[in-house]
Image 1: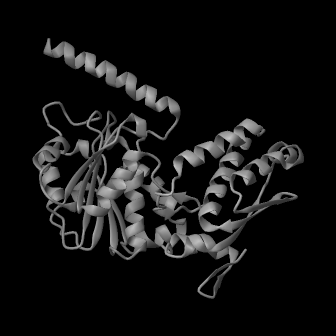
Image 2 (image 1 turned 45 degrees about the vertical axis):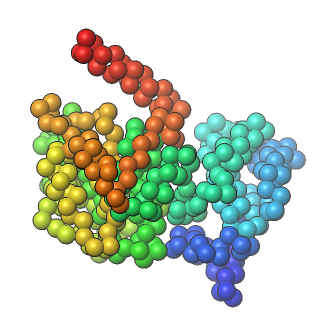
Image 3 (image 1 turned 60 degrees about the horizontal axis):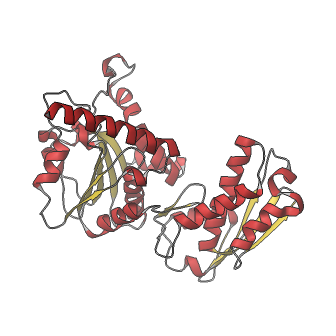
Length: 349
């Protein structure tokens, strides 16, 4: 596979890296070829009788060409459609390995889901390590992206799985790759959510790392492992507990405070006043999941209220409608919210 951009040819092994480096200006008008190799599967069960499943995908993207030969699928088209087709085929591959077959209805369902997630206005934020475009999938996630672009401090509030942290990390990676900032700093308060931190083995950093694992997961979806390791070794990407921020001025950085509902008032003030020149700060949290001791108030709710009318600061509220995890997650969150509302009402009465 080759791609021509301004008379430069990129080898197949470099295409994903090329896309991940922020080359967005002309990429969508460029013709691209991508080869997908199918492994450990019966071709007829995946492709369908007479390649029916692949033909169904091809019919949804008439501007592109999909050719199946043996255990390989070759896609030719412009980059924007290649990203969508790649997402669909990889979703089908995962479906096959989980259920052992692909039906015509499965194919139509994944095509429909991709079309619902993607519109002309949905800008790809970054390309993931597998070549898939990472983009906002709901209206509130799009609002969050715009708020981050337009403001230097953004509070992103919402339930688990609503994409607030993932979108914020994607915007941070995008800013770094576009050289808008020199480094990314991601932090969390080290609050024990029902577990005892002291009983974990290792030194302080080794104790803290499990609490930062969601951040590592998000970064791992967007930056190749070796490059991520290099970034961390050179402090281009720094992941650390909130306590490590004290006394610093964070210049030319994209700074993300995650799980901010577990900050105290003093911790939140300390963090927000670290902001230096040419920096952006994103504060994410779920105000329904506070793990602080009962006598301590969350610094997140206080800061949102105090700063709501300050120019350059925005607050974006995400809801259960934005949850993109398993469909049951929405129902679980709604059930707990209803029970909490009953409990709060009972206390008032």
